Length: 167
Image (cartoon, rainbow, N blue to C red; front, side, top):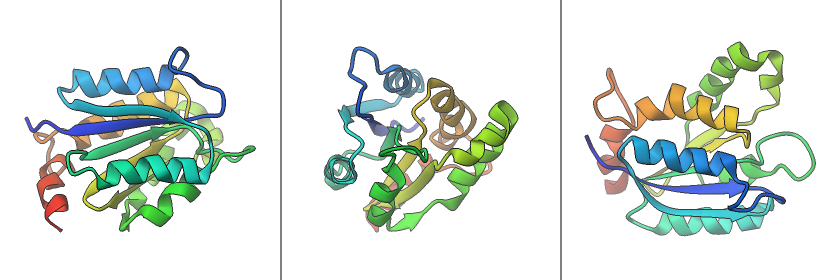
């Protein structure tokens, strides 16, 4: 197995480390998979606060993957996709599509309001999940766990990480 170093960012105007269940779940899933956690932060739902934190991690050579939770809906200040997409060198269109397809089986047409997205920036994979613990569980268990597992076939992102960093 290849150890992957991940950073986790919760995007919320109200959550703290005491009540960030989605962030806690991501940390647990990452650790249980045998990967390392580089950093975990919470920022308010503000395009520039999000970009600032994510940009620091993109620039850190030891960070392979960034997973965000929150700010992907249509209400109020939800701005995670708008914050992240300009940072992407390449967008992973299939991530959001697959997330919504899987979620449809769980929450029906409400999945249309999810703007989960993924991309690659400076050799760092970035995945943005909705803020609910159910969405985080779906995203990790049904997509990210296998894509960050070097033994998953026929292909996975884990085996490409060294090449992403060489670009």
